[in-house]
Image (cartoon, rainbow, N blue to C red; front, side):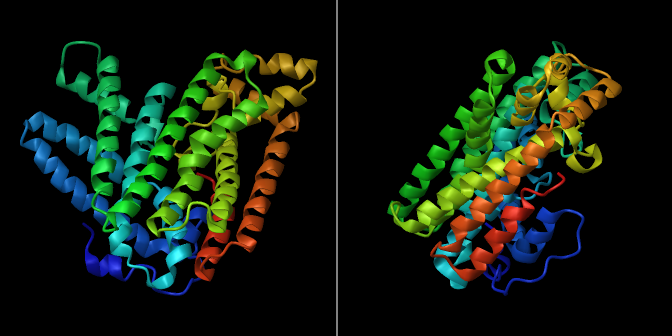
Amino acid sequence: MANDAVAGNALRVAPAQPEATDDPVNGVLAAFTKDLITGVDDTLAAFLAAEVDSLTEIDAAMGGFAATARDAVLAGGKRVRPTFAYWGWRGVVGGDGPLPSVLPALAALELLHTFALVHDDVMDASDTRRGRPTAHRAAAARHRSAGHTGDPDRYGEAIAVLIGDLCMVWADRLMAHAAVPADRLLDVRRCYDQMRVETVAGQFLDVLGENDAANWSVDRALRVARYKTASYTVQRPLLFGACLAGVDADGPLIAAYTRYGLAVGEAFQLRDDLLGVYGDPATTGKPAGDDLRTGKPTALLMLARQLADPAQRHALDRAGSVTGAGEVARLADLVRETGATAQVERMISERVTDALAALDTAPIDETARTALTGLATAATARRS
């Protein structure tokens, strides 16, 4: 568990002005949730240390594997999901809520996130994540350096699948440490399970779209955004936090959180679509243009096809077959020329506006309202 003194003092101060930063998400998180993130990280570190020690007793190699999984969890990230869950909870309980009682549940969302990232990287054959080799690439490299027999890439993928599986189990185990009434924890688990189901649904649609792009559409791309990203990034974490606070599932707060979470979550994914084409690799930690190289049917690419003239559409048909940096850059310029990039920016703005309207009448703590207002903008205006 996190140090109680650290956790107990978390977020007992009034909202501060964001610290100077190049990243608007980090600016808001630094202003509102610095101690929360410390508490989540401390909780994860203490829990994972015990888990790695336990698995090391099985076999020294197992300990090394568990340490790799631990490092994947602790390797950075903005802790967006625990943050939204916290404000979902804080919106109900106010500033005097006992944070240590719910920290394990909040931290468990980061384990779920690692599970999703590691498996997603395998499915997408991604080389880097957060500026480092992805789990399957790193495992393959260790296989080669050790001189093992067999296919190193196949080995790396198998290890990454197991890392993701272990993180999913760890999330369940850590959540059980939350000090909330048993009947309430059961409601929390129902919300958490729905989040996991929707994440799998979104991931399936994402994989299907990459293999059936000819039959894809803007609507289906937005459906992927809704279930793959909006559900488990913003909407369900908010509802998860409300469940931790014991909110009535049919109350007006749930309706407001649902509307806000869907709008911000979709905008978050639409920003990802733009970053996947135009982002700076030094900031995003991933190569620019990967979506164009694979022909991934994002809302951005689907809109470009929809808005393109015949000549532009013919050129866009090359998405998925371009390789060189120059070709990718020319295709990115073409997407912009169709007006799709500007249209996605408008869609992001519309969703943020809708999210803020949902907060206007939500019966929540004013500090939470302020934080969620800032996060709606920051999470969708980010550069990584």
